[in-house]
Image 1 (cartoon, rainbow, N blue to C red):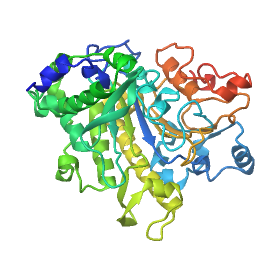
Image 2 (cartoon, rainbow, N blue to C red):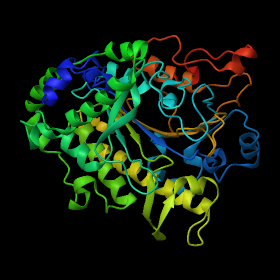
Image 3 (tube, one colour):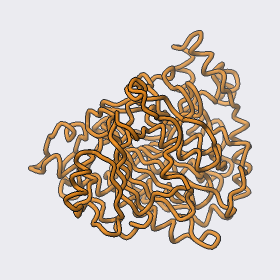
Image 4 (cartoon, rainbow, N blue to C red):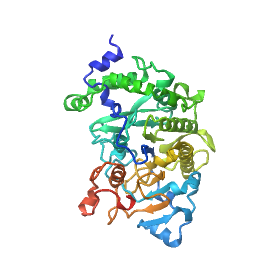
Length: 464
């Protein structure tokens, strides 16, 4: 019988089909002005995000009218109250931007976006052939290299239970290259901090190799011709993982100071852990991965329509389906809108925890948060069956981030009108502001093109 190492060396698909980070051999990018890398956290949520839910309750009559008509609007947050479900971010208003009016019709909408919302293209569902380009998180990771390059986390499932272990992710390092992700806090903890907790663990029995063997064996059976060729174009060997771990072992001393201690409830996938408990544990892992320098870019699918929701305050005895909530179902007499708001409150609490922990971590003359940007957004647009006409973003950015947008509620002109901006414009803005001069990232919007409306390039009002 072949060992897993032999399997991965001999298979035509190799390790690279799941795109083990492309930055394994590059740990130093373009020097930054303050000597520290920029960091990006993408937090994807399901079930859409109705734009009115982000409207400020203290708008003046004129501001409210413009917002409801979806016309251009900009107001200072320090003069307004936030929506109640965002109260945990109130103390961080100077770092907050509520961005309304972006469209995402060039990506998948409906129930789910899969890889497409991160790459601004139609992805043909969850198919490999539909992955058109490296997703925005991987493009940013190239600008700010780190040992892991990019880390993907997810808390998703099949309505009754969470996925566990190492599973296929939604980000992509290039065309037809699906990433892998850590699907439970304990697996993420074990794999990311292995260089300290078990420095000899890269062998034929670790979780990554088990996952890759299963995935590649499956693909080698079902993919033929061009599909197989597309995967085999990105082959990496297990030795590259070992090389990364060797470098990590030299960082073990500093890493050890920040390894989170997870409750025993998360062992073996954490089957009995509630959703809030899983959120808290995954947040701890995410924070530690940034503080230790294992990565500068994290993508976190905080839920999808299959994520089991249980242990929610006020609905502790219910096992809630986000899909049912999306169709206005209620639980224990609690309405769908109320439950959706409770879910969002829990998400905001985790974001506030990230912000506060990074603000407490010294870096240079400031803190780690000064060099960090967090983006929370609905993966499929404005509603349960997203149309992609609007994709609200909640953004928190530190003082050294290269954009001028914080402290404000900004509504951009509505889709199909002069001055409207798309998801591609937003991702182009991120790249242009941080060292990639790309003319435009992502696909163009068909309707905007048909109406000959300008949709190329960065959002100039945000550029410094």
